[in-house]
Length: 302
View (cartoon, rainbow, N blue to C red):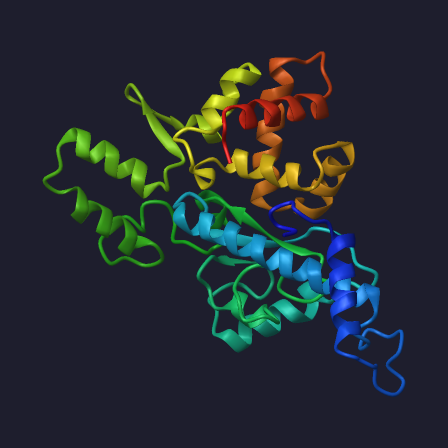
């Protein structure tokens, strides 16, 4: 219900509190008021936020794995907890050693499917949040930076069939392309790049639902919702709906920044914000975002 925007944290913690009370729970000796007490509001909030964070992390991870343009993650600071863990000094190098990862123990970056992410996680999943009360986020990095970090072979070395790194992917693409017509090859390229691009004549450009072209609010609402019924087809629309779920207000913008800084959804929201600001620089961003939401809802989009 939190993910869908039907409830906020305050309502959800009340449900938890009533449930704990309903089963006659009593904290153990010396537990009352501590993090081991199920009645502790801070514990309840952290449990809720971690659950919501894992759901969002799963969705973001699925989208990233569908795209060939961002093959790796870099671990970055999203927010600063009261007691930051020793990620660079201890947790990362230990996880690299324990998992058999090929990533450097000195730079907190690895390919998306590297075993180091599972080794870091307290929850048995390869996406953030990786630990309770963690302020660390996974920021996707492009192929060029992945090469710079030594995560991929130098440019040109991974193009052959069965090569190191992602070479097998290029080889598979070449095999699939054999015998295709020009139209079939164009379609295959768009599909292989995760649907985030489209052909504009002879040029390959960002698909408009995820692009940078400035439209008026009515036009942009139409662009973001087509093809209809495919929320995941527009990352910018996903980011807008996350903002809507947080309350669609100035406070929602601040909450969005706190929650998503350093992650791809923040970049999508920022790109959408630039498009909106450019369409009407004399109006506040919150008003423009609310206007866009209103027009999307008016189209019958759910």
